[in-house]
Amino acid sequence: MQALEILGNNDTRSGFGAGLLEAGKQNSQVVALCADLTGSLKMDAFKKEFPERFFQMGIAEANMIGAAAGLATAGKIPFTGTFANFSTGRVYDQIRQSVAYSGKNVKICASHAGVTLGEDGATHQILEDLGMMKMLPHMVVINPCDYNQTKAATIAIANYEGPCYLRFGRPKVPIFTAPDQIFEIGKAVTIYEGADVSIFCTGHLVWKSVLAAQALAERGISAEVINIHTIKPLDEKAVLDSVRKTRCVVTAEEHMYNGGLGDSICQLLARNFPLPVEMVGVNDSFGESGTPDELMAKYKLDTVDVIAAAEKAISRK
Amino acid sequence: MPTTLELQQIASQVRRDIVRMVHAVQSGHPGGSLGCADYLTALYFQLMDHKPANFTQEAKNEDVFILSNGHISPVLYSVLARSGYFPVSELATFRKINTRLQGHPTTHDGLPGVRIASGSLGQGLSVGVGVALAKKLDKDDHIVYVNMGDGELQEGQNWEAIMYAGSHGLNNIIASVDYNKQQIDGTVVDIMGFSELRSKFEAFNWLVLEMNGNDMQDILDTNAKAKAMRDQNKPIVILMSTEMGAGVDFMMGSHEWHGIAPNDQQLAAALAQLPETQGDY
Image (cartoon, rainbow over all chains, first blue to last red; front, side, top):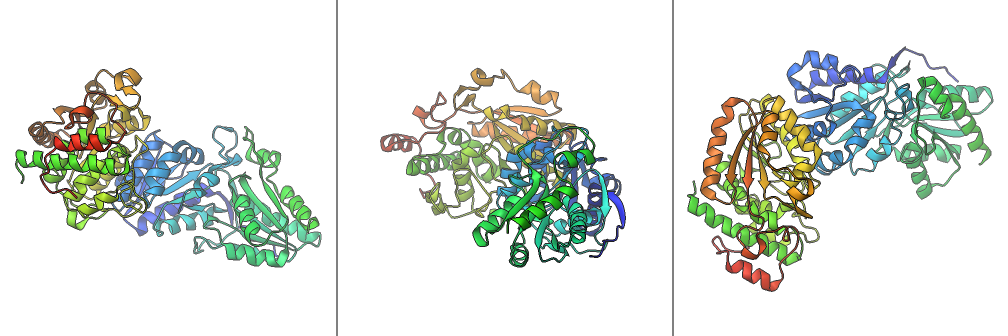
C-alpha cells in the first residue's frame, strides 16, 4: 500500500477562505456575510478584495441567514460564515423557512465543527449539525477533508444553484488531496481500493482512515477507503459497489451517530444490502474542553478506533 | 392611477375574497387579513412600482413587498391575483390539496408574486434587509416594503434586523407594523406589552410615521411622506393602526377572528357589508 504524499499542514477553514476569495474573483454575484468571526472564518482576504460585497452582520445569526435569503432572492450568491453551532442549531428555523423551503441559493459555511474546536468546550462543539442539515429537503451537505478539498468545495458550491451546507474545522491537519482538484458534489472519492472492509469516512476522519488502512495493511487486511465528502446527496452507487466487494463496513466521522454519515450509510444498506456496520463517531454525548488531539482520542475518533472498528466489522462477516 | 374611491372599491372586493376563501375551507386567518386589506390594496394598485405580468424572483428595477406575518395570506393572494400576478379563479384553490396558495405563502410551488416563504414569524424583515442590500449593490433605487404584525415583534430576530437596518441607514426599506394590538391569546399589551413603538424604532435610528391603516387617503398621504423622507438615509417604519376584522362589523373589536372561519350565515352577513366591485372569483 502506497503512503500518501503529505503536501503540507493547514486548517480546512483556511481552504474555505481561499476558495471564497477565488469564487469572488470568478463571479461578481458572490457576496459574503459574517457574524463577527471574520478572522476565525478566514474571510479577511475576501473582505479586503471585495469590501462592498462583504457584510459584517454582527452577533445576530438569525438576521444574517434571513439577509442571505434576501440577497439570494435578488440574484446574489451569498456565503454566510460563523461557527458550525451558530450556523445550524441557533438558526435552524431561519434556514428551514427562509432558505431551504424558499429554495434560496444560500451557502451556509460552518467552521469549528466537532470536538476539534477544542478548548472552548461543548457549548461550541456541535456534533449534530450534519443531521440537522441533511434532514432539510434538497439541502446539499458537504464535509471536505483537507485544505485543498475545502477550497475546491467552496468554489464548487458557488457554481451550484441551490442551498448548501459546507462544514469545516479549526485545527491544522495534513493536506493530502490535489491542489488543482475538481470538486464534484455528490461524487465519492476512492483513496485506497481494498477487498476486506469498506471504510466510508468524511472530514477530519478521512486522514485518520488513511492511516488506519495503512496500519491494517501491515496486518494483512485490505481496506477500501472512500472519502464521502458529500453527505447529501450520498453517492449511493459508490457505497453499494464497494460493499458488494468487501461485505462489511466502517463509517468514520467527527459527528454524532444519529444524523451523521454512518446513519445515512446504514439506511442505504438496510434498504439495499444489509451488512455488518461498525460506526466511528460520538454516541449520544456532548464534548468538553481539551486539545483537539486529546478530544479525538477520548471520544474514540482516532486512527486506533478506525482500526478496531475495521477488525470488528470483519469479524462479524 | 386609481382614485382614492377606486382603491376603496378594490379593497371591498379584496375583503370579499378574504372571507370567501376562508369560508370555503373553514380555515385561515380573516382578522388580520381584513385589517391589512386597505394597505395592501394601496401598495399593489398604486404605491408600488412593480411588474405583475413579468414576475421574477430577482425583482430588478422594481419595488418588492415581503409579507412577514404570513398567516394573513388571504389578503396577499387576493391583491396578487387582482393586480395580475395569477388568475383570480385560482383563489378558489386556497388551502386545498395541490394548491399553489398554501396556508402560508411559499415560493415552493412557483406562485407568482411570492419571493419568500413566511409563516414562522419574525423572519421577513431580515429577508427585506438582504433584498435592500442587493438593491444598493446593484444601484437600483427601488423600495423594499415589509409588513409585520405587532405581536410578531415579540420575535427577537426582528430586533436584530431593526438594529442592522438602522445602523446601516437602509433608506430603501419602508416597513409597516400592523398595529391592531391583538394576538391569538389576547391583547398585545397583556401578553408582552409595549405601550408604544415609536421610541423603540427611533432608538434604533429609524424614521417613524403613524397612519390609520383603514383610511385610504391617510395611507396614500403617509406613504408620500415616507418616500419624501428617504433622503434622510434612514429606514422608515409606518406604525399602521388597524382594526382586526376591519370592514365586517361582527369581526371587529377583539382578537376572536384572528384565526377562525365564518359559517354560512356569517359569510352572508359579511358579504352583505362588502360591495362586489370587481366580480367575485
